[in-house]
Length: 194
Image (cartoon, rainbow, N blue to C red; front, top):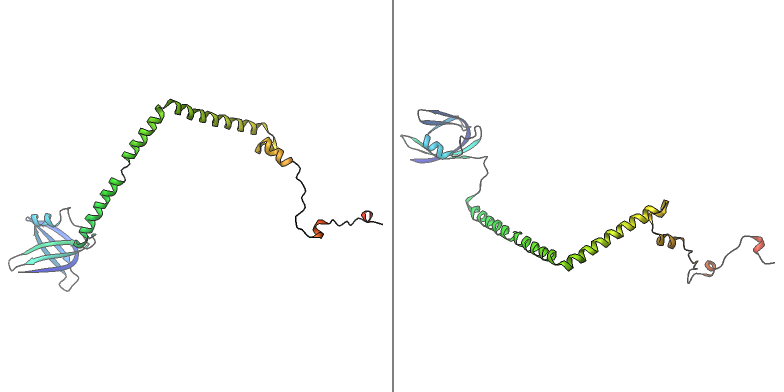
């Protein structure tokens, strides 16, 4: 009695007489290997249903002079989680659950709703808020009307801004400038002294 492990492509699964015959192409000189499995073994080996054909499988079986018994059939294309990583995955799942608890915003949402309810029930506070909203709305309407009343570029500026732009600017001479910068030179002969 010995265990053997082979790798090959599962090319066919035949059913008949209460047995499943798995045909595996090993790629070696012996070519096609046919392994029998009872219906019970077959459903234990493939609990999710029939295997995908033409995929590479690793098959472990036990051979005695009387029979061959399939022990495991593993699709090499499947995603595998090595056994040594299982504790790490469990820890990660625990952290995810803890994160869900920490990120639970229901308590904060309830506290916010309670605070907003208290504000809504305070009549003097609500009057102050409504007064601010009304003043802001009134100021917005006044700004719109004053801009619509203007013409041309004046629409972009208030009267006060236009007055500041039109005000004469004092002509300042630079402080600490050289004599030539403060002296005007005339090119007109009439301005020259006789």
